[in-house]
Length: 291
Ligand SMILES: Nc1ncnc2c1ncn2[C@@H]1O[C@H](COP(=O)(O)OP(=O)(O)OP(=O)(O)O)[C@@H](O)[C@H]1O
Ligand SMILES: [Mg+2]
Image: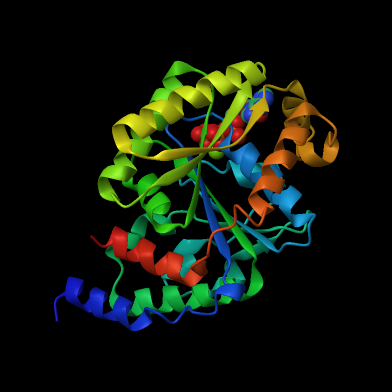
């Protein structure tokens, strides 16, 4: 059997094994077109806020180059996906507990290699992800910025996506380009969530949201869901300097209040979509990387 065929038959064997929807983890991927828009800060503060509702949160740092999340959470994971891919570690051994109660997996160099793995590695990888469905209610994946496959594949594989942009024209133009590329590869996509960060005020946020919503509807037939906006707030910068997430060090800051509003929206029953779970996410991701 050639490799592509083998992969397909393997993935088919796994299909429909995830019919226990109530226990599947939700997988939320955070991305942006342009870098430095606030994804990693958003990921961590959102994760901590959701954790305060007794949700078991796992953050996956899928930004290959940078170790932002680790620094912000004050941990140094020794092992990452690479070690699991090589069969040296199982998934529980690459999960790091942080002092904030949330768990972290560092993608490291392993995620880049998903396109070159053989069928036994695939089987092992997917099986390991079944464990995540048992230990996490919500998985938040912080990807790098841009339109490379390393970013778009994650967006295509997860049920829920959030694109972060700032009001800067370069940022929302890049956000649009990213959404367009995903739509080209996934014509069935009908909607996407957007968070506008570093806004001056509500009016600016509303103006930027309307612009993005308009072009996405007109040219891509996509509904943009406004998950919320976050003001430019120096408290976040102060929090980063103190190496303590803003939601803890400055819980009443404008930044934290905005995160809480977005978090509540994400937990709202009307928003929650059916989750296919971590294992299905990994099957999809591997199959997309394998194309
Ligand atoms: N709402 C905000 N107010 C003030 N500063 C902010 C805000 N959001 C993020 N920042 C700051 O912007 C910078 C970039 O943030 P962050 O690292 O979270 O972005 P990123 O999108 O993850 O970047 P990268 O693309 O490099 O991964 C940081 O210095 C952060 O403290
Ligand atoms: Mg980042």
